[in-house]
Image: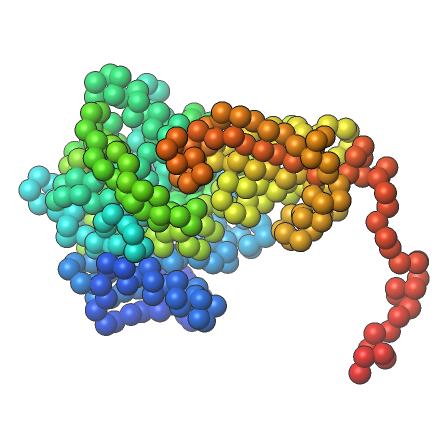
Length: 452
Ligand code: MN
C-alpha cells in the first residue's frame, strides 16, 4: 500500500471525484476554515474533502475533512466499512515493526535554526473562543525514555511563537508519562510531530492499549507492510518518511505557558490552563506540502478516533466475556456493549473490562445481544425495562478520567464513573418474553394488497 498522503488523496480523487471541494478564493484561516466545513455539512449533508488553495498569511495550502466519512476511512484500510473493526483488531494482534529508510518525501525541504518559523504555517483558529491558532493534526512520535518503545498520539499544539508552541498532554496517558520520566531525569522529552499522513497511519496513532504496545507497529499492520520511518535532523526520533510535514521538537522539563481556551471533541470550549512548552528545532516538509488541519470537534475528528477506541474496547470485553457481540462509543466518555450473557454476572464483568481498558470512558451500558447498540432507542428500551438501579448500577468514585471533561473542571479529570448492567436478569432466556406474532400469520399478510 502506498504510504504517502497524496497517493491516498489521488485515490479518492479518481474513485470518488465528487467528494472533493477545492476553494480557490482566499480564505482567512482564523475562524473561516472550520466554519466553512461545518456549515457545508449542515446545509448540504455532504462531507467532502476540502482543499483551500489560497490561505491568508501562508504559502501552504490547507486540506481538511478527509476522515469525515466511514467509507473513506475504510478505503484507507483497504476494506469495506463493516470490516474496519475486524481489520483494526487483527492489526493490534499482528503488529508489523517499521523499517528505517534513508530519506523520504518529508525531507524535500529542511528548515533548521533561524529558518524555523511556525508563523509561516497556516494560523488556523477553529472556534470563536479559542486562545489562538492551533495545530490539530499533529501526531506525536516519542520514545519511552526508559524502554525506547514508541508512543504516538494526537496532541493539540497552540502556536505561541516562531519556534514555540504549547502542548496538551492528556494527564495520565502515555506521552504525559514519558514527559514525567524525562523530567525526573532532568531532560527535555524529544518529540516529532507528523502532519499530513495516510489515514492508515492516523488510525494507528489512535490505537489504545498498553504503554508497551508500539503504535508504529500497528500502523504497519494496517498498511500490511512495515511503516517507512526516517531519522529526524535534530533529535533522536524517527518519523513516517512519506509525511507531508514534520516538526522536530523538545518538550521542556520545566517551562509552562497558558494553553487554551480551546473548543474540543466534548462540544465545549474549556478554559486556559498551564501546560508544557514545546521548543521547535526543525521543520521538514514535502515541496508544495499540504498542511492538514483536523476539523477538530466535528466528524473529521470524531469518526477517526472512534474506530480505534471501539476496537480496543471490544478486545478488552472479549478477554473477559468471550460472547461479546458489539461495542459502540456513541458520544464522548460513553460506551454501549452487547453480550450474549451465558452466566449470571457477565454484564458486570463487561463494565469492569471497559473501565479497565480506556481512561476516557465514564459511562457504560451493557445490554443483551438482542439489542442493537447502534440504535439509541433500543438501548434506552433495555435500560428502562431490564435494569433496576439499586441492583444494576456500578458506581466508582475518585477515578481518573478525561481532563477535558467540563464536569471535572477545577479537578482536571478526577471523576466518578458509572456503569449499568441492563441485561435481563437472571438471564435473557428466563426473562419475561418479548411480544411476538403468531407463527405463519406474519408471512401470510400481503401488505401490498392492503396499502395501494
Ligand atoms: Mn501508547
